[in-house]
Length: 98
Image (tube, one colour):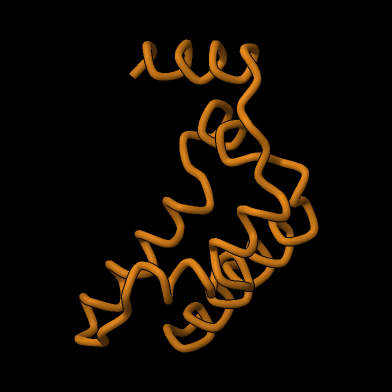
């Protein structure tokens, strides 16, 4: 695979990941962190970092809007729930393994 095609495939996979997360708004960030070690906010930070490495200024809030597909405050109000005791325990247990 040539470099350009590889880049296009990687970009397409990233876009599909964002679509998948958008389709699964029921999955809370704390669940993602507990199970996978990253969440939507991590993706937003990685997006900012990748942009900065290329000399492109992107704020964290702009990156969040790319990842959440709407302003974060709006997404949070509509979809984020308070963490349950079980979610908090799972998150704590996942952090102890690091």
